[in-house]
Image 1 (cartoon, rainbow, N blue to C red):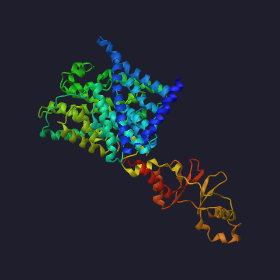
Image 2 (cartoon, helix red, strand yellow):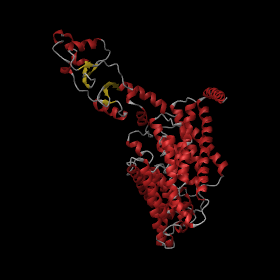
Image 3 (cartoon, one colour):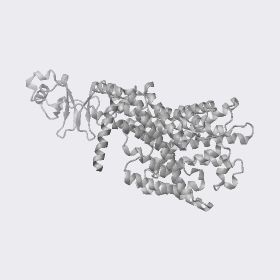
Image 4 (cartoon, one colour):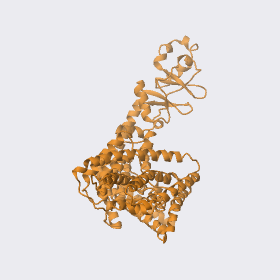
Length: 596
């Protein structure tokens, strides 16, 4: 009975897919974007509800201060559950969700595995609700992108449509979790997609608005952060400029320290040894600095309400919370160690992102600067304004997405009264970090490996081309010890004017061109006197079978050649790659990546 029902369902879905594919392209994309928006919006709601539910189970029974001791143990427990789930059930790496989405676009034709539509929700919920010091935003972006990608693949859509719907899922995820439709669209445009046209923005808009509506219906219309902000004062512009520069340098610290810490910890081969180290270190940090427990958004709420002392009261620094200068010193330490806590969580087996920690550290940076100025008592700065501006500044620096930063903070605070300070701080932070770091935290690792598709269409198309797919094998090889007579026989049956030379084990030795032997071919007296090893020459360059296309094109440009030999890692001759075939494939791929 079950098999029959499954078979009927499959046939129904197949017929539905055929009917949908008959729709005009733009109508189909808009319709699918609507459903992707519903899916990613619901995923965002489920994630937030799940985190809240598990956190309630873990901490809802606390009655005495001594119960707070469990807050030191919980993060490690959550990391362990996540580690076991990923290692033994999924058997797949689902960490660093935004980077994984970029990798899917760059290397896997925008295809994301089906389990990513739910696995990141479970693993990140367990990690964050138990106190892991990471954010839920990157996992939900991965989930939304997976929803879009898998819907497109189920309908057999081409690469460019899969990529657009992947972007729709990511847009909807950001819009749904923050109730911020503009931020969702801009996040996808600035961080994920390249070379996108105005017609392709419409599906992103549909998905973002739909996901936001779903979030409103399920979670209410309240803004993510509510605070009373002062009106923008022209006299504070120099301080906003200074905050932008400060956020730029904090962003540089954030990116480089995070990547360095995670790389060092991952050198520990045993995953359980990594977990033990990271769980112990994170527990110690949470004991000393309780704001490092979990996402940390509650601390931002206290800062926006002007109650930083309440955050300190539960820590070992509690007795000093009334001493003026101890407050900015304490939060400076929290800001520094938040990067460590986040890195320990991710490297130790937890699943979460850097999006949330970026907002936390940015808010702390804005608070520290404004509180220090206010303590000197020569100019008053509205601390809530600077907390929000700092959040935007660090987003602009760490993610290198200033437009997303500006509109996200404006939307999650329920108004645009701080638009000018947000623009100033985000722009200057972005400009500052670009002097030292050309890549965002999401793209830096991919860029190092040359696997990043950027907003440069030429680079993105070359990234999609693979040398192994372009090898031509109709060049007839000749043996190194063969005579000129043997070579002439090969020439007679070849349509090419280049002849690769190999040894008895098929290892590439060089090439012989037709021009090289043209005159000798008609002198039969030379046939048994001249051998291939007398004629062979080195090619202008040799290409590896797995070599990046950017490197291959650089060799063509440098040598001026039209054909270059290709070898594998052991030096075995594979074939030739030609400039003309690369150009032909380039034109085909350019059609694929142009999202018009």
